[in-house]
Image 1 (tube, helix red, strand yellow):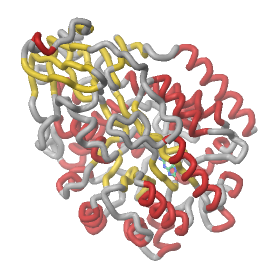
Image 2 (image 1 turned 120 degrees about the vertical axis):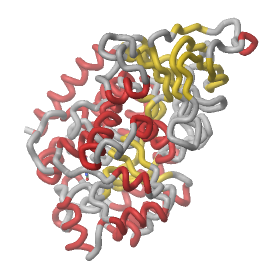
Image 3 (image 1 turned 180 degrees about the vertical axis):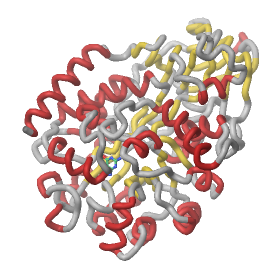
Image 4 (image 1 turned 90 degrees about the horizontal axis):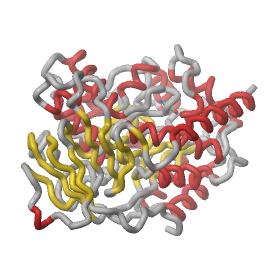
Length: 467
Ligand SMILES: Nc1nc2[nH]c(O)nc2c(=O)[nH]1
């Protein structure tokens, strides 16, 4: 690891007080909750959490005091699936199936370069922060030969915005001529992918417990990747001690593809290429029968549930209550911005609950389970339970402070019900590793207006290039 982004050395301690606190700190659904509590952050970690006022002996003299009156503090939300580069191509192919949408967009994405990737990442990450997200993945799988250093570009963007980052080295090596979905012009050779993946791990993966940047290996999907690449990627990830990620069971079209090409379901196929274990998390995981859910649970694989994107492309509704009942770790993901123009993780929590209840009735999912997926579930999917996703002493200082005292929320007594069932609350503050990223609905680390202007210009250039 030669170039991990680091946080500024000296960050003042922060005491958030007079707010409701939802810790998610127990093995159960929510853990301890305090209607009027405090959270003390120092040295990048949570030092104290509790009821009422913080013990004055614990509060450093130079601590910044944040009055959280009218707010609820939760662990920062964790986004387990994204394609940040798609921030430049939102609003295209809006009434298409996933395969139609992909085949429309692949040629546009083929023109992307490292500057575009940085610009898109700045836009998408700042937007995530505004929705209470403190850790995000990115699945970047379009890597044109002449694009420049796209992974350095997005990692520098995450360091600038200040989010904890889990970029995944995505890839495609199964072009149309070999029976895959993407055009041959956007796929890489298997050898280039493996060399490029090892290089990204060497340069950027930081396994430290307070890591701001961890890499995972992420060949794109069964219909865009050869079986050799799937298999060797798993071997490489395990040799290097990094996690594995891919799209799985997103659409009926994928199921047909797997049955025709491999003679198996998507899950059986992944098992056949070695993708079994608690180091694997699958995006979408919609079309899973009972056998596939049992296999996932037995193998320890996690799911990134992306309800808004799944509805946007009409892919289906994942069987989340069944997955949770089977013991599968389920996190939430916004998915790429071109299949979820909104890109706000709070919405995934809200939509996950509504969809689960729409299918399974009012007791199919409770509000604390929805928040738990967005926090603890995400931490488990990324292999970071024990580090992030809970408000407890020793955990990393990643906190979201939601304002629930506006007229939109005041009549709702339970702060978790207000947060999950109500409209999206304003963001009083977001801290990552103890550093303030959002203050009163404003990102304080980057100039969001300049970023928006750059996004518009980069999008225009990219679309013009595609003709
Ligand atoms: N929602 C998405 N599904 C995908 N499958 C695949 O191969 N690429 C994508 C993608 O970008 N979004």
